[in-house]
Image (tube, rainbow, N blue to C red; front, side, top):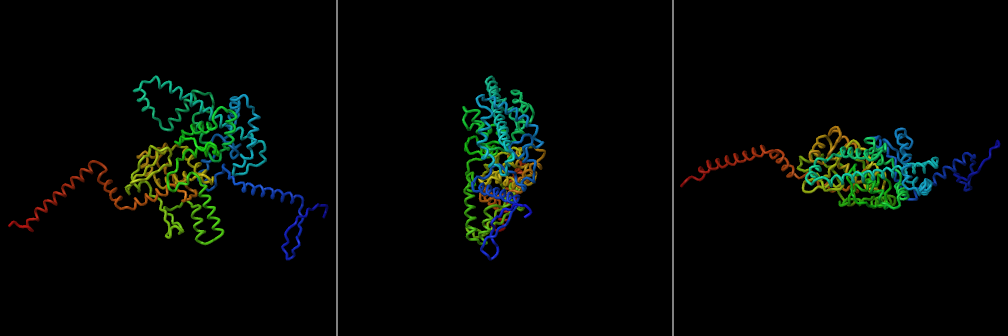
Length: 541
């Protein structure tokens, strides 16, 4: 056929004849078919492995609300943002940090670290949800090495400088008299921004590093390290750290990272799950969560929920009924609603429709007699309690970079199926509480929200947009009981009347005095009327 060699490929016959039919492919077509077959087999093999990715590109439905919140500002970590113009300025510092890191252990050579990372290359590639193409070749290993050494060296420098600062402060405190020490402690209470500037000043004193001598750079790098798209596997960091510092405990890297991230948000001090961290964002996320104590807690894992969903999917396939289809969709995912009321379908456990009504905003709750109290004894912002009409909420500090941190914590929970959704639930709760600047002002007066933004409207805008495009599973809502109890309290008319009485007549001393005077006057008038009328009905004998 004009000199063209043809390859015959057996194909199923669509006619009534049972004999197979052969179709001819050109060499180019055969190569394309082989490539597609190889790609399909690789994808199926990856799915069968059962190991989901852990580092994701943020879904477009979430990203479109605020794209800047998911992109690094000064340093790129990993392949997703590697080579972008915005972060090119930090590449030179990475090489400087690599040189500094290698000098810490003269026994180890650069080749030793590269060989160790090559052993983890396949595992590291599988951690990314988007395919990290083989065209990167050795560039992938080089990138893992450069970024990993930069992160480890950065934490080592921060830890050394922090220890030096603590040592100098301890020496100064020994020379201060007890009374002067007490006064100094009161005078040196700083807000988070002043505390960060003080820390940066100490860094500049102890180090000639350009990163630590640039105001705000340390903080920007910290926030960039907590972006979902800006991660490398924690196993890479751990391997590099252990090779360079074999005399230290393996979990010391996690401790140094958490000590550095402490300036961003209070966290649980206990080092747990020492060998199961996926990346730095997962490490930070894990230590912001307290031990579950609520009835609806997913026990910090979605494994049980995933198994439940899988069982429901199996039943759905075997016994497809209209009710099972509706209930399956109800139990898996729900969008955040635009209204404040969700009408769920009828389930087997509840013969009547289940109605989940969102709690009113803070201002309306106050009118219903709910009291707000700052919870100081909590190690996590997630530890919200409601009891006897008092809603206890841990204090929350909000700065210009808080929005970025919040969004990436939620994005991680949305993408990683084995993660709990406690931050998603918490911000859903805060979105219910905060509708307008009046709600922010109320929570600010109670000490629950402390912010350094331009206005209360900016804070309300932040919370109102955090949950756009977010899926929520009410089976995993650890605050579901709290919502129901608040609703019961608000439906009690006696609570509303008592709150109205307290608000109208007991807000200041003059109102109380006026109420008492009016009550006395009313009592005297009734008594006088009684003694005036009584003789007519009971005349003297």
